[in-house]
Length: 98
Image 1 (cartoon, one colour):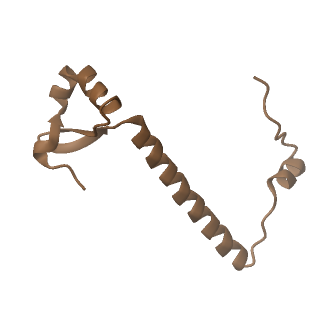
Image 2: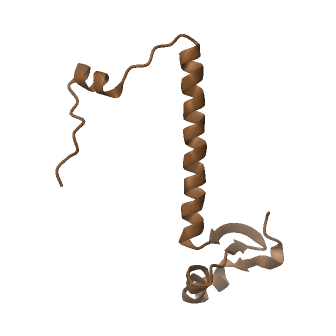
């Protein structure tokens, strides 16, 4: 649901109150929308919200990848395991040392 113009905090005001707004998002779990002339530009959200959004995006990407792989294979196109390609082209798949 888009933010209403009266719920959009001007960027200039947010700059002056940045520490307070970070605390509201981090500890109060508030989602704050910042913008210019009432137009939303960005959001300041708790990191848990960002992590949840990224997990949802990862799940969507995984489902899409699996769907496309099924289509590829259904079209008679072969797949090659990564290990086979690495061996063929002399690529080392072991973890680099820290």
